[in-house]
Length: 111
Length: 112
Image (cartoon, rainbow over all chains, first blue to last red; front, side):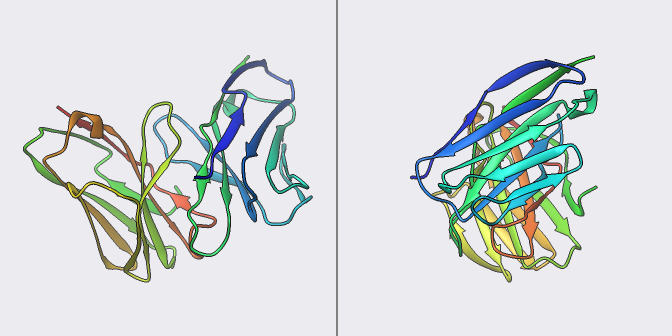
């Protein structure tokens, strides 16, 4: 089956620093999604990418759909304490194929 | 508040109990899902309903029984669960199948 490798698994950063995380797949996806999950809450969709090479921003967040369609990147600029949480990537092959989720990157911000 | 509401938020049940999880959305979405989230594992899709018909059942044990009476409500009926079934159960809905899903806050289930 499809697998998504997300890295890093966890990271500690200083407030104000930029953050990068990525997701790689053994197979091609048509859509990449990035979610954030706060403790005790469900995941919230941050950015959706629908086209290879696409670069999309949502405030301080920027995500890119890799040219090979097998990877995606999420960058957070000028991190703040409320960025703490677990970030999940997810890929979708199309139609009624299920969405495959990564294992998550746990982000902790040191004030 | 994402528009998807799950109740209860927390549930502790014995292995011989029968309980139900409830999910409600008023976003006008056509598809609803149940996911299981266990520690250090990716989100696992359990069931997909599209227009109130089950379109996917990912080899989920029969002790989990979903029900979708209408496009706004989804239930997960639980009976004779095992301790390893303890997890966060998330409901989600979307306008298009599997994409742009809005998640509920989840039900933290503990089986004792």
